[in-house]
Length: 161
Image 1 (cartoon, rainbow, N blue to C red):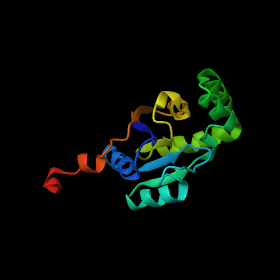
Image 2 (cartoon, rainbow, N blue to C red):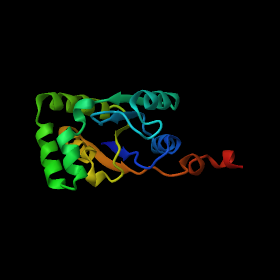
Image 3 (cartoon, rainbow, N blue to C red):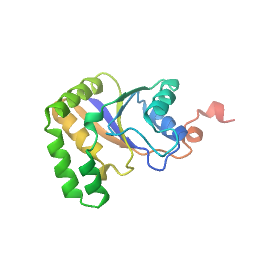
């Protein structure tokens, strides 16, 4: 059984984010943000893809697996049941099912992480995407948290001297 990781970059630096992925053995980032832009330095689509590429990690944006605007607005208002209902309906769209099939194919062939902003996976649609992917193929899900100062923490002992 393959492991599917999820991660949110809220509050993280790009260096710590990448070091956390490398330490976890992630080889591909599946960006499941509808709009892959960020005010957080380094996390907008093109800059992030380039930085990940330099670290040997592939990047794929699957826009259709992003939370639609009305779902994001419900989540911001703290209406979690409404957010989940909106996103469950979104998962039933034919184009979303196609994107899920693409994600399932990728996840089965290389260690993959679902990326979104929200730090807490229980408040993020990526957990719902991960659950749906486990319905499609044999995956276990592991939620990652970005380790701060990860570049220092994960350095091999021989390099630390």
